[in-house]
Length: 351
Image 1 (cartoon, rainbow, N blue to C red):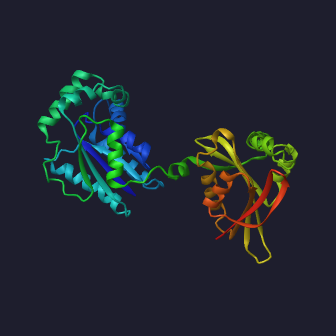
Image 2 (image 1 turned 90 degrees about the vertical axis):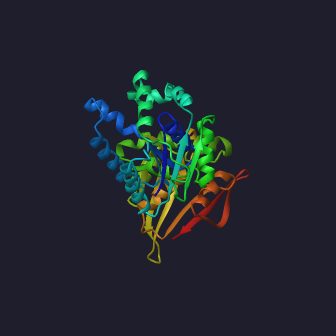
Image 3 (image 1 turned 180 degrees about the vertical axis):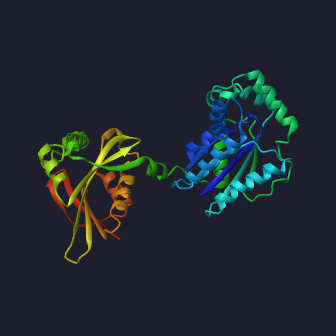
């Protein structure tokens, strides 16, 4: 797992740049005050030991996720060996996973930083900065007591950049960082953590049926297919759910049901286990967000012993065909003409 260490003086824009960088990469932001503020709220003062322990928990648990990496903001006192040692301890953990560590140092004029200290975003996320007189005095004290800007040539890491963002917008700086280190854009990893498959209970068939009708009705109105799931009865759906070799799962994102998938499972004549997806659907308002792709990956993971997967779709629905081919399915056999506007084609994936 990769790590971006984003350092700089107080109010230089570490958190805000990190927020923008998170939007355009597959990295999540862990800014320094995410731990500092709760500790101050609970203890009534800054408890460094508690903050350090909480950071360790976040690092440990985050490394279990499927994200590309983390953006970690930290005010680094370059004249303090303890800060060098701490950064090394953090980066060692990420490099031990085989990941790459990137170092970004932001610098800006004090006058600009004093203005940034008053911004709505900063004060919303950092309660301890809301007493402006105190926070400004603390900021000046920190940079006079410690050396928070590196000397030229002091940082010799391979993946390092210093950016003067005095006159740069946060999104511009984020793009500069992304391009400098060729960071990957947003991927499916975040969805992989947010999308779940939850088995449908017997008392949830009515809710499942409503989702199915809502999802397939636009296709029915387009093609007028008399075999469409949009017009089949709730009893048909219930029978499919109760079949011993089939199982329905709600597709859930962030706790909301956004669709469902039915998976059939059997052993073929060659003794190999085969799964069939029939049907899978996402409600219209959640379509084209990558949820279907993730749901299929989750389905694969539920039945790792299956050697072959099958499904069918409408030839004229190019988006669906693209999705299944992206998942590794290959078209097989001849298409079945349903009417003059619609043809059903079969897909298979062999592992």
